[in-house]
Image (cartoon, rainbow, N blue to C red; front, side, top):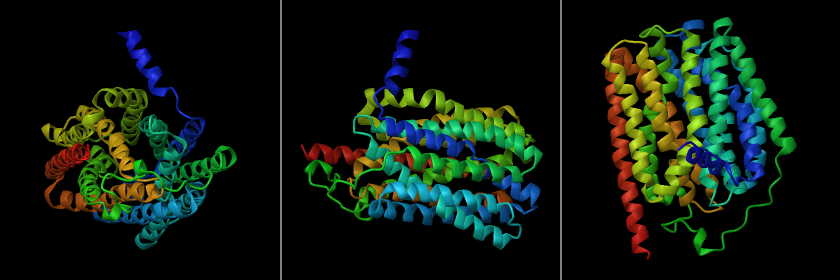
Length: 409
């Protein structure tokens, strides 16, 4: 049993190209400083004394900037290449993060947050395009999993350190987060191989399943994106309202909240690559079912908070949420890449990322207003309903993909 497990881990990491590992290193540096987002709601309410509604408004603006940034990042990556988009996104967003600590008034805060997230989230479709470029179909899902591993390892380090720094001075979060973005940009520029221009699509095998050249005309993918929005509205509560719930209702300290974020990241670091490799190897034809089940677990992680007001429920909720995330997200991204061509990959990945950006706009504003009017228990019930609806749509999309594949035989 132990030998089989060790072989599984070994095979999960084997055969990944050097540039994919370097991209993972860049993500690790960048995400090790990710401290502002998980503590932004607490910073606004505890340090700047914003109301919950005002904090929700800022988080919604955060999502709006992410929406614009991911759209631009996808377009620019397809037109000018992902290399320059990654570098400029990391560099400029780092400086804006440092500047963000000096914004105090609500409208100034919203303006700076919007520009920062617009610049920073252009990185998402660019790095996803880079992973696709430097990998091959046989190891592409694992390449994306390695990228997520780096993100979450950095998240676990940054989340724990962020809780410690927040206990000292919230302003330290902005300095560390901004400087790590700048360092990541320098490392990327210095060591990542400069790619050739994208190869033109000249093969029938490089055409999406429905023949579409644009993700905005791929109807099945648009349905998938709609389900992703529902799922992401629930998932993003982990970064917007959950820290506030842990603080106000479960009476956890910032350091304890940071440890929970660290737990989330470490679970992904130590299990996701092997889990994705094992599941894809055995159930590659059941990806839609796996995605839907993962969405259900994310919803359940919030609903379980309604069973009592005990600090231990925070651990249980984060644990279940993380399992759901690991089952859903890698295969959602894999599905997106499979629908695209080499010429429109950036736009497909941008539209997929935009689903999360829409959720970033919707989730905090929706969640904060619902909490203000009906309380946290109602919010968790509603979130469970959204995740259930998303799961049903994911399963339907999977059935349509199978029908299309069978009809093409």
